[in-house]
Amino acid sequence: MIANISRQLTTGALAIAGSVAAFSFAGAAQAVTLSTLTITGDATISPWGTLNPVLTPTSVTGVTGGTGQFTGVTAANVTLPGPFTLNGTGSGGAFIFSPPPAPAPGFTTITTGPGLVTANVTPTSAIGTNVSIGAGLFQTVYTVSGPATFTEPSVLNVLGGFTIAFQLVGLPGAVTGTYTLELTKTDVPVPVAVPEPSAILGILAVAGAGAFARRKS
Image 1: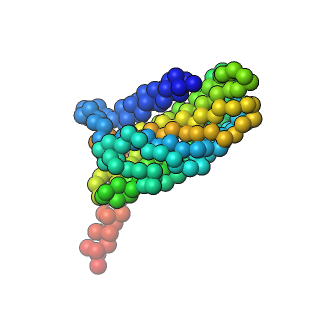
Image 2 (image 1 turned 45 degrees about the vertical axis):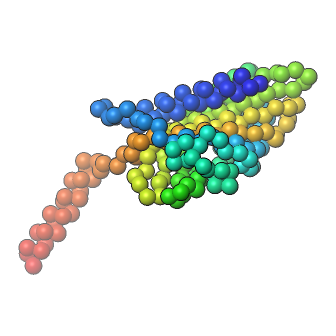
Image 3 (image 1 turned 90 degrees about the vertical axis):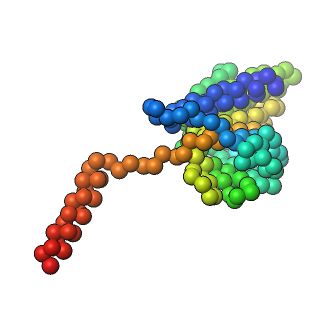
């Protein structure tokens, strides 16, 4: 069971790396991981085979692996992560839910020394596995991952990634399980939106009209 969960989290970790790389651009420096955090807790999880399964964290029971800005963070410093609704019906031993769940701004908030850090996540992958572990019991793991942006209290907002694995072990129909959320924050600033050329022309046109009106007056 632990091996299966580890594989799911490894897949999520690779997705985090890919998400950070996807945010970079030609000529940008290699992203450096500044902070990591792992959050665990209880969850209500739709059984395998449910149409559009819902994954809902219900508590925060532990925090480990805090580095960088997240060093010293405890369970009391973390707000409950938001829920996800997947698209599709899990079948067989493995299933890819597509399209991925909707973006989740304000997914969770972490209290740090400088202030509140908010993780805003955009899922790009949602996969599930379901295996028999004997005695009529099954292990179901849903893993959602993708890029994240971190809203900072006093410095530039930065990019990162997330992966969350929801684990359900029990008889068919069981709904009470656990989750493990991994957050990675880099040193790459969130890109500043550049106006489209048409928008720039519109701004210039308005400015020009105003200047012409002032000259006439």
